[in-house]
Amino acid sequence: MPRRAKPSSPTVALFVRHGQTPTTGAVLPGRAPGLHLADAGRQQADAVAGRLGQLKNVAAVYASPLERTRETAAPIAKALGHRVHVDKGLLECDFGEWTGRPLKELTKLPEWRAVQRYPSSFRFPGGESFIEMQTRVTDAVSRLTGRHPASTVVLVSHADPIKAAVAHALGTHIDLFQRIVISPCSVTAVAYGELAPTVLTVNSTSSGLDGLKPS
Image (cartoon, rainbow, N blue to C red):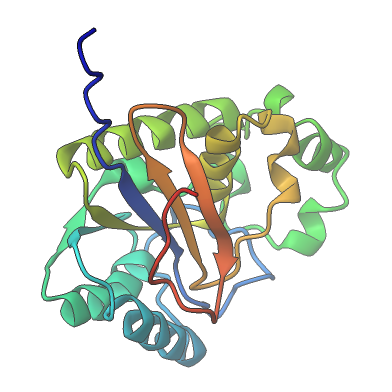
């Protein structure tokens, strides 16, 4: 009886949310240009760079095109001896007409319940639906991890895209993805191999990251 080929090692994607900005938690910034990291965000970026810089076998660092993600990715790439590659697939959700509006206003809208409870039914006026965002992000993750087999890649993105990627990896419906918390400069690790993805850690902000592998 012929031996089965040994499965190849998975590629581990390390999702990093950008650091804190002056409007984090107060405004829905979306894709509006010109939003940079706050001082606290730069400190967070340096701290996560220190964590990731200790890892081996990191093949590449990718970031969303927005300033806050590229500024977060820069010290990570430096610590790893890489340059930052920009990929539009990692962009924030397109919030359309809601871009730049204060959250205290948006939470009073009747549509906010759909955003939180039934996101699969909602499309931002003039922007994306959550399903479109999830499809875009998971396609990008598949493409980028496929580019670096049996290694590790760092993907610097935004809270909602990372939550959507985690939900997809878990086989969780998009209507439940708001139950996942992704904090500024947290690290979420997912192993992508020949079989289903394996979620290794979610929203890690302080613990060590070496030794992450499917059990």
